[in-house]
Image (cartoon, rainbow, N blue to C red; front, side, top):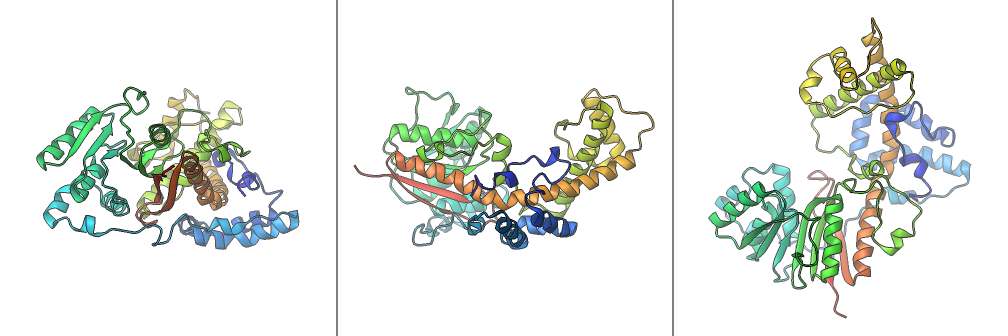
Length: 405
């Protein structure tokens, strides 16, 4: 279905001046324009509501086009049943109140929830553990404490290694930090071994891909990973891992790979309001710069500090113009350009909303590419969700164990 629907999700909303697919999907275009602006955030935050709102119109368009898409995929979950992924809550809940207070200190509430949920789903294999992209080793230290496992935590930032090792030493944990660049590891320095369980909670992009390839090469016994930030890759386009995915006609840019991440379920109303304000300002300036440059193309700007949003739109435009060495027209009517920005934002939000119909399907495709790769390397693989969507939308868990030959 991803190949069939590419016109709806492989889009760049900021560069568009109209619904790019409206000629082919007229009913869908009418449906998104009929939505009230005040309802868009709620629809965007809940996939089932979004699908319910837009698929009737999409179905009408598909019928008119003589096409048949399996729209049930839009709401299917990667979650496995409890029989497939059994939770061992006692291993984490066995921490004393005092221990938990120390182990969760300086960790944001949702992150601690993610860590404890992840550990609860780890199979008890009585193997030494390699924690990949460890940071300060919060995950590894909980595994060392709750499981009594020997943990090696690999992290490239020396300061984080030092802080993590100091905590481990203070608590007499069997956790050792190795300071190394994941991309510089070679055959002679590979920390992966056969008798080992490798864990990674939200290792980004090519970092978790690197884990998969190194572990497969070493024949590592077990893996537990939760992928994240698929767009953080070294190349311009996604390189499929499995033989099956390599045969696909889908070509994914870094921009395309951001689609699964575009679900705001934990942002506060204030954060959402600031985000909408920033986008309206960026779009307003974009329209202004197109006129000033007499070039009808998007001009990207660097990231903003939140404090800049407390100023005025005119100050923002002056900053943006200076950043891009652009001379603005005299007596510029900034209020008029801000209104243009708000109008364009109504458009971009609807383009994104339709694309977001397919964000879960794309993430499942990416996860299944990893699953198929591991199966091709001789692993038995299980997939599930280790926590609820409200804790983190990046809740997919891949568990793999090397199968006996």
